[in-house]
Length: 143
Image (cartoon, helix red, strand yellow):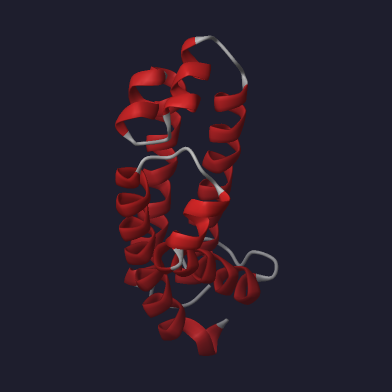
């Protein structure tokens, strides 16, 4: 662990954890939350019908976000060093940045979500990616 925790990676960890909590909210509160966050009417209808599919997909996303939070905290020096820390933090940062700035091609690949969903989530992911990138750059030599 580093001697001084990195504020940007701590912020990145918090952002990922908040996103995970919001996904859990979709699981617990169902269709209204899927609709509010723009996940698409199909997901909302499946949740209303009691299908396990929305829950499974959303739970996987939640677990990924929580693991990303843990890796950011490890890179920040708050948690012990996790395996493959440098490449995993690079991958997390890249995914957030790509999701934020290359959302238009994804709209064609993953249809059914509202434009509001794509714009908001792209903006959020771009911010998350930039926060991770700044933190990663600051701790690069210690990883």
